[in-house]
Amino acid sequence: QVQLVESGGGLVQAGGSLRLSCAASGSIFRLNLNVMGWYRQAPGRQRELVAAITSGGSTTYVDYVKGRFTISRDNVKKTVYLQMNSLKPEDTAVYYCATGASSPPRSYWGQGTQVTVSS
Image 1 (cartoon, helix red, strand yellow):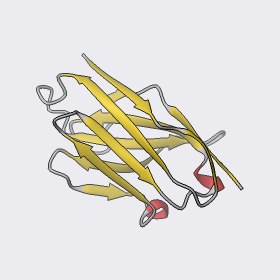
Image 2 (cartoon, helix red, strand yellow):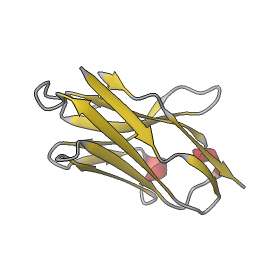
Image 3 (spheres, one colour):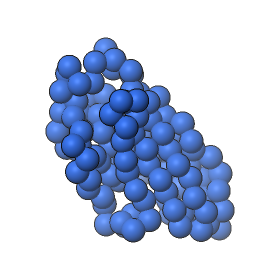
Image 4 (cartoon, one colour):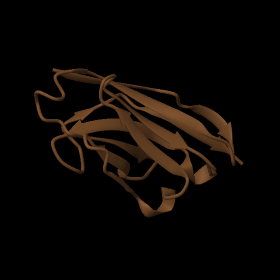
């Protein structure tokens, strides 16, 4: 019913920037999947929510990305973005897009995109 496809990951040096995109297809609004978010999972660690945004534009961030990452969405394009600035090696992880009716969004997941930050 709903598919999420991430793009924009890659290799970047510390201090650099990347923008991740997640395009949704299917009936996200009919299913009331109001919240979209980005998680990340580093090797040996649990998957954690990094940022989330509601259909109305309200955002939440985990403390350690505040001021560096910005989540946004385009409801017409059904796409959510994660602008990541001032990247650090500890930001290295697989980043997953997800959507759900409420936060934290967990109903549908993308396949993940690798972000690697070199020192």
